[in-house]
Length: 162
Image (cartoon, rainbow, N blue to C red; front, side):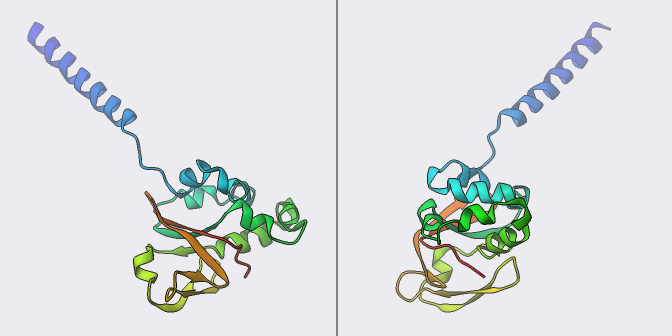
């Protein structure tokens, strides 16, 4: 009887230890986690939240995100960001943000030296020119290959408009 109780206790301890190990194992940051952890993306993070896209961008992916910085958003005509963030303009905001996302994993090495188009999540193409640095439409990739658990982020210096 004592042996059976001891085995049950050990089994229970093993299950608790396994659950504890799972609970304390850190998961790799996803695209949203990385953007939220970088002050240069606070406008992008606010827009993703307002558009209701955070859960999507936390999904399995993989995604390639061409992420405009706060400076890129600030370069838009006065009032543009504030207007896009209004609840009545959510569809327009979603269209702009999904124009920055491509399904699939496209590291800089797959873009360098090439020209072509990638279809964005919003269904429209962006034009990529990797012959002299990497340009996406009229924006420049200023930092490439920020790895996330569900894809890759490339920092761009202009907001892409569909």
